[in-house]
Length: 254
Ligand SMILES: NC(=O)c1ccc[n+]([C@@H]2O[C@H](COP(=O)([O-])OP(=O)(O)OC[C@H]3O[C@@H](n4cnc5c(N)ncnc54)[C@H](OP(=O)(O)O)[C@@H]3O)[C@@H](O)[C@H]2O)c1
Image 1 (cartoon, rainbow, N blue to C red):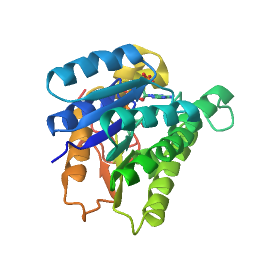
Image 2 (image 1 turned 60 degrees about the vertical axis):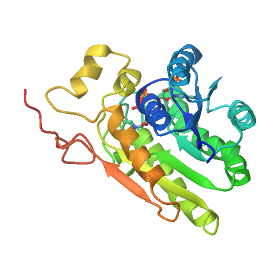
Image 3 (image 1 turned 120 degrees about the horizontal axis):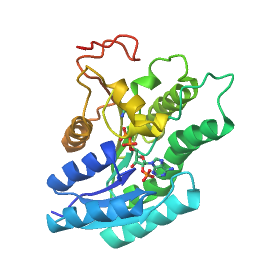
Image 4 (image 1 turned 180 degrees about the horizontal axis):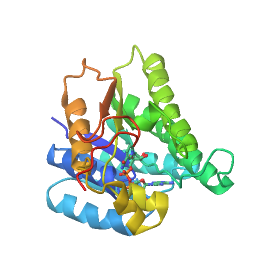
């Protein structure tokens, strides 16, 4: 049996890194990309030492040519692509719709929506050529609700949900599964990237028990290893301490 091959975007930290580690343990070879290439190389060295073939690429998913080039070179060097995990994404700030800086607006929409479409455009031809596979989109509970200051991030994640639902329609009849995994509060670099302030980022998870990156990797492992005729459409996964899809109802102990 040939080893399955997974492409993971945003593998330099958080969910993407944990997903890469979990899939490597599951016997996958890996194509890993992000903008911080040195982090990818450190991760790749560990995964290679444990027996996986790993192709890395310093790549910005907002740049169509970069992600197209990365998917092509990955498929060439690893021998195809079977599983695509569109994970790269971010939130910036908590500005109201009325006053959000154009730079933050562009970064969230270009990364979370356009970057995801570019990743799919770059990868699907290789998945087909490999005989079929699975596309997993990392959405968010922000795709199921909204909150003040989160308008554009929520719009981008509602967009991810729309893309997952559309892809399932467009790919029906082909042996390609489409799953959206939609986490609630998880302790990664997400809040640090959002606020650019360590104390503020730590405050997000203060007194509560958030999800960890490995919890999302386990969701990916589960949906990807089910029999090929079983498509899990969507997983909404939240910490037990988070009652609402937004931060409106969170149990904190201190
Ligand atoms: N943590 C949460 O609470 C939470 C909840 C729901 C959904 N999510 C979603 O989960 C996904 C992963 O986030 P995370 O929590 O793991 O945060 P993270 O630790 O900040 O990881 C984000 C990853 O995305 C990559 N990335 C960002 N912009 C990119 C770009 N333009 N091109 C390529 N890679 C890019 C980053 O790599 P580089 O900086 O090296 O490029 C990094 O590897 C995101 O889509 C996020 O919206 C997170």
